[in-house]
Amino acid sequence: MTASDLTLHEAATRLGVHYMTAYRYVRLGLLPARKVGGTWCVGEDDVAAFRDREGGRGTAQQAELDTASADRGIGEPRPGVGGMPGAGVARSGRLRAPWAERIEARLLAGDVRGAWSVVEAALAAGSSLSDVYLDVVTPALVSIGERWESGELDVSDEHRASGIVMRLIGRLGPRFARRGRSRGVVVLGCPAGEQHSLALAMVSDLLRQRGWEVSDLGSDLPVSSFVRAVTTIGTDLVAVGISVGSELGVVAETISAIHSASPGVPVVLGGGAITSAAHARSLGADHFAPSLDAILAVLEGLVQVEARRS
Picture 1 (cartoon, rainbow, N blue to C red):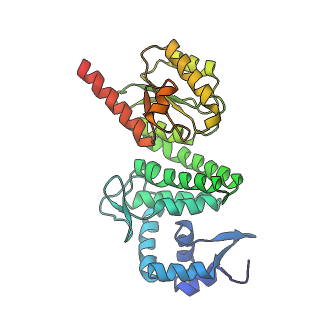
Picture 2 (tube, rainbow, N blue to C red; picture 1 turned 120 degrees about the vertical axis):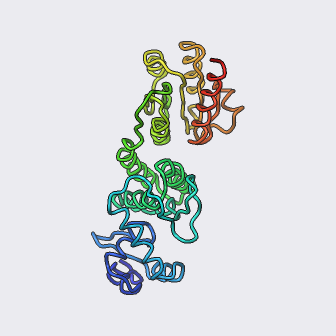
Picture 3 (cartoon, rainbow, N blue to C red; picture 1 turned 90 degrees about the vertical axis):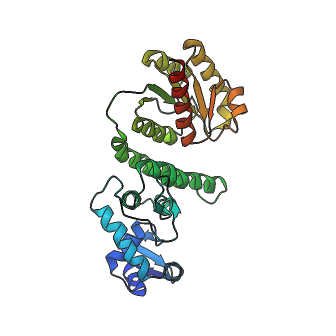
């Protein structure tokens, strides 16, 4: 601790709330804090900023509402529970708190439980499962990646955050399951040299939620293995993700091999290394997906085309 740091008990006293309420602020990402030797420490400036920005007691009441709902283990949005004042708008149309900023703080603190608490609070406050992936987790990961690239964060911070997100996806994934007739089969994967697979894992869940059967091949897949999976499984669409610009030659080779082995099966390409639709086409892809939303739109478009043909 530094001379300007407060214990969580001291921070709670400054804010005029119970210790557990202050702890919940930390877990929800409302109040910045870090652990030093097993003790939560809060900067005096952060306490003052929290009190001035949020009006102290008013935020305490809302945080209690959000956390109480989350503590009941609610996994789906409940009607009639709004977001916090001044919040943005989720895809579901509900007002919401700045969940992305809150979960980013918990990810960078290495706080697995706190990150899960933010997810549960967002769901309890009206965010859908899709909102959590698209509007909470993804913006947080993008921000962390940008801060790493700028030198503000170490690669260990980025890797630790990614590890926590993978745990969150593991807990949320089963909730995306949908019963009923399959709309088709999608194969997703990252080519050799690409180690990042979080985006594909989230896309997989979003597709399952919409009735697609998904085979997620993960990252760093050799060309021959990618092609073998596509031809063995049989698929209506192949999605390839790439964030490493140095591996674009492998991407082109992979897509070409897929087209040769499975003529007529469209390939959609996305990821941070792909800059435009023209760039994707130059590598052999049939479609470009610059975001998680985009691959869903591509699939819906293909379904509509097939419906008109039949």
